[in-house]
Length: 78
Image (cartoon, rainbow, N blue to C red; front, side):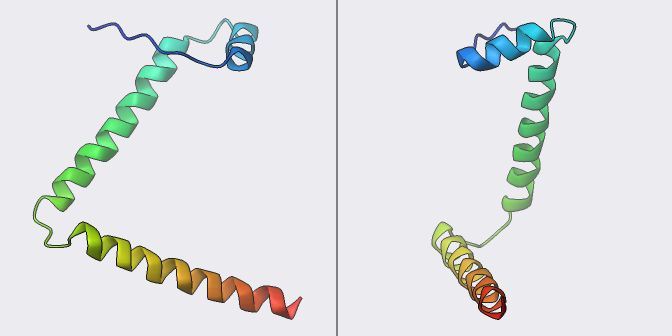
């Protein structure tokens, strides 16, 4: 197994020390594994996609605009 060192803020370190019974390396290992699995799944899904980065950005903008419009209307009613 490979070792990895990470820097964390002092306040987080203080909080972690309060809970010394927790195996923090295991928590970090599981979090990293979960994120890596999500990325791997995304890579597999996108492997055959014809969607370009520009297309994805445009879709994202349209979604954001729609969400903004919906919330704008909701706040007008209040």
